[in-house]
Amino acid sequence: MSTPGIVTAFTVAVIALFPIPERSWAQSANVQLSLTREYGRALFSQCRLDVSVIEGKGRSAVFCSRMPEPGAPGNVHRDRPLTTNEVGDILKLSRGSELFAGGHIGTDSTAVDGLFETLKVSEAGRTAVLVASGNDTFTSGSRRELIRLLHSILNELQKAATQE
Image (cartoon, rainbow, N blue to C red; front, top):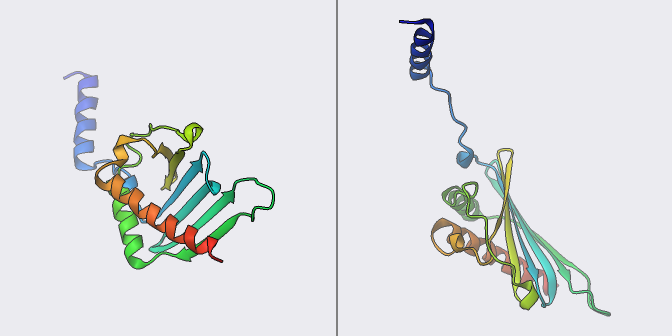
């Protein structure tokens, strides 16, 4: 057996005995999500929901910018802790959604009075931004359930912020 053949055989044997551990990004217990909605024409020009789960505890906050009109009230903000169930659902659904695996393309319909929605995910030192509006990967499975949960939290906080 030649020297390169021996080295190759040795390397394969070492890898078989001591596999290189892969970092599982999807298994992180910490995740940060930012759902941003830009509106063509609406009460708000933009709303952003920030959701953070760090070491089993979660927090959510919404920030909305009003359309710049004379006499219109200012921006709104509201936050609250996430429930234990919401934390579990967010972790489960973000893992199941494989947000770092592609499916980032959607549509922007703000020019025709629609909306443009993006989802930014940060986990274990990585960040991805996905266009959620008009994106078929958000119409079924874990991504659909995740975006529905985020919309629910956004709507609740937005309603509470505007009623103050």
